[in-house]
Length: 276
Image 1: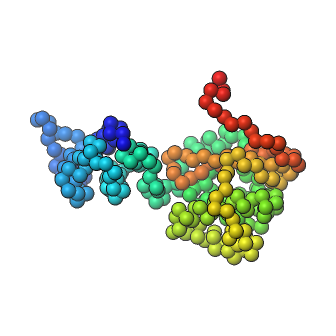
Image 2 (image 1 turned 180 degrees about the horizontal axis):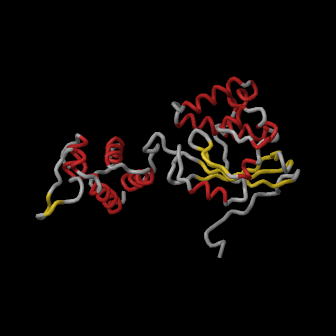
Image 3 (image 1 turned 60 degrees about the vertical axis):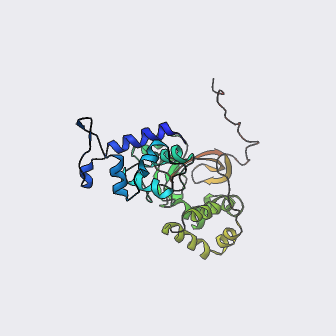
């Protein structure tokens, strides 16, 4: 627990909430009106015992329960980064799920500008693999430049994917299908992912591979064969990252290298100081 950081985070957010917005009067302090809600008012709003919130803000509440953190975060209208910070300061770990169930479904528009500045194919999908943004080199990866609305569905069951993703059964399905299984384990109620799973189970080849797929498959630095519709056969090396403002979304970058032979050995590992 980081008591100092926790107190600063919560006191600043508490000061931004007007008591009048909850039908309460603004407390006075040393002859002047204090900013925001008082600690006692938060206990009142959240129907908590006296000093519950005060213990949390001051760091006197070891291992605060999840429902308390959730109630406080929603009352304070925290964003996803503040929600992560609250967990780290109070419990020393990341939250098990985003604060907003729709998190990862939208991005700041500047991400399109970032993607357009990349020379490698790159795209961002939401937590259900619906495509949020992509660049022109990514568009060129698809026959007739028809970019799919959902990249997981395309990779898992669409017939034209198996003409682009060379050796689909042995090189791609063992990478793709475990990702679907992991995502469903994290959120079994996701309607988009459930529908994709049903499509996979209705495909005899995909079903067999899905049922026998490993529990998890790494992504960063993995190299797979690919037939580029315009550049021909080659290999693509994949890297993944996550936009901080949208937990659950994924930025996928694909470095395509034309040629029939796989790269010998893996690229070197980057470490601090290597760029000096």
